[in-house]
Amino acid sequence: MNGNKQLGRQGSIWLVVAALLVALPAVAVAQSGTQVLEDESKAAAALVQQVRAATARFQELDAAQAAGYALLHGCVSGPDHGAMGVHFVNGDLVGDGQVDAAHPEALIYEFKKGAPTLVGVEFVVLADQWNAAHAAPPVLGGQLFTYNTAPNRYGIPAFYALHVWAYRENPDGVFADWNRNVSCSGFTGGTPGADDLASHGS
Figure 1 (tube, rainbow, N blue to C red):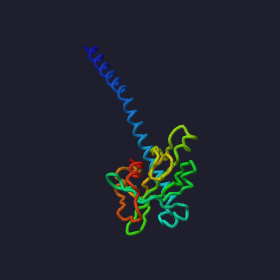
Figure 2 (cartoon, rainbow, N blue to C red; figure 1 turned 30 degrees about the horizontal axis):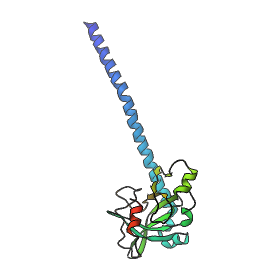
Figure 3 (cartoon, one colour; figure 1 turned 45 degrees about the vertical axis):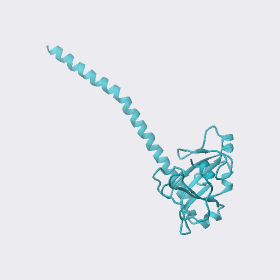
Figure 4 (cartoon, helix red, strand yellow; figure 1 turned 180 degrees about the vertical axis):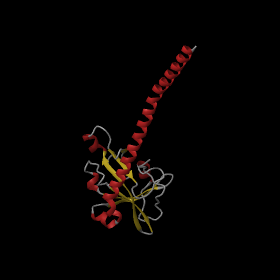
C-alpha cells in the first residue's frame, strides 16, 4: 500500500512537471511580446524626444522660415474630426530622398488669434526616390511610414509620410495623421479644397 502511495506521489509530481513544461513556452512568448511592446514604446518615445530637440527653435515661426520652411496651402481640417494643422514645408528636404529625425520635411502649426504654435512635424519622402534605393518602405523610430498617392495636397508625386505630434497630445496616438486636439478655426489664411483632403491622410 505504501508503494501505491509512493507511485501516486510520483505520478502527481510528473503531472506538475508536465504542466510546467506546457506552460513555460506560453510564458516565454508572453514575456517576449511584452518586451517587444516595451522596445517599441521606447523607440517611439526616443523619436519624439529627437524631434523636440531638433525643432525646439522652430517654435518661433520666424526661425522656421529663416531655415527654409514656407507655408504650403492652408490649414487642413479632418474629414470627420480634428485637423492636420498648417504645414510649413522645406522643399529641399522633401526632394533629398532621405528621412532624418533631426530634419523633418514639414512643420505643423496651429493658429489662434493669428499666433502660430508648433504642434508637430511631418516626415515626407518621395516614393520613387525612396523605392529606387530601398527594398522596403521607410521606418523611423520603429514607425512605418504611410504611402500617399498622387495627386495630393502637396502637388508632388506619390510619397511616404509620417506625422509626429511632438508638441500636442493626440488621443489617437502620437503618429496618427489627424489630431482631435488641433483646430483650424483660428487660421484665416485659406484652406485647401476637398480634393486635397481626400488625397492625404485618408
